[in-house]
Image (cartoon, rainbow, N blue to C red; front, side, top):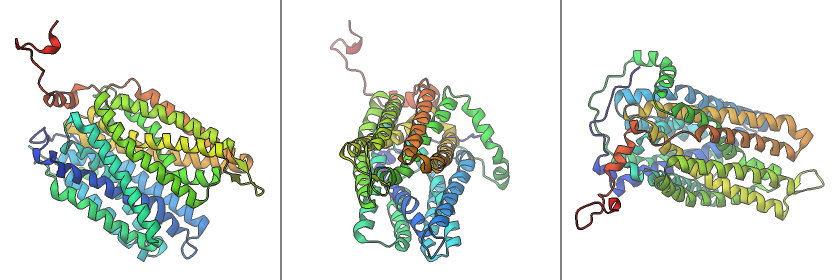
Length: 464
């Protein structure tokens, strides 16, 4: 399936560059993070392990399968969804459709039986992941190349504010698990609406109608997209590298609480407080990484972030060996181990925002305008595939070694993440973010201020 559509106007609509328009775009980051934190990371797992449903052991298994199915299926169809948006020439209608498909099932999970609730969650999480394809690509509607990094950083930082907001609301409002589903759906809708009301998307110059045949033929899209990626210098290498470094990033996001409680010895309240503090670090550093992205480019920013993550993972692994052991054999926090663990968490929290800020802009730099959706589909695929593979690998290491090694099993699992992070760093290192084919560099030059002139009208920078 060929992507033949180009926008009527390559430059963003001036309306979309207004402060209110950009704010509406960043609020979507705030909105979807509420779903990610409150439902995926919190309520769904707790709801399934309730004795009235599947119970602790079976509930965790069902939850893992549900996450793997929703993310894995989305990984398979991501390139197809992205290419279809390129063919139609519009992204916001797709974003709206998948946002609604996430919100509606979420609202009624708590009122459903365990099996139906699980199926509804699979649909909702699939739609949440699919919507990210179009949201990430839509950054071109609200930014110019010279400010894209700062806007990406702003969106990421505001997204983390969504985590803090809903965490405090649940904690101090004492919201029961069943009530978190309709609450999260309502908040997601409320904060997502401004994007669809405020933003304008230019009509395509030409667009081929999407038919049933397109959907049937689109299963060959992945091979086609991978062939198209070969036309962009370094794109394939970047995508493979993203698979490896996303493995570490996605796994740490999921297991951080478990490591804090099972390997360090914090209770749940202490672990939540620490993770909340590290989220605040991520918020502040997202703005810094966004500034750096515009200042030195997304490639150098991403390499710096990945290097810091490697250091943070080493510090985290070392910290686990510096805690004590209680009479029951469980770890007991010791000052030195706790301080190093918090330091590692601060480094990883800082870098978490940096990865999201820089690799999104890097991908824009590598995508020709007519294939933005198509390539962002593959971009989403490798990230989601790594999430499935990384979680299975980490879980297998813990399952096989925890009985014999205890806390050391967590160190082995963390060290495996260091390996994948370094492989990703090595793969991305030679990839340039200066490819002219995306039009980004030409657009950036168009937005640069004119050169300063001397009295004799010669550019000051060129005078001897």
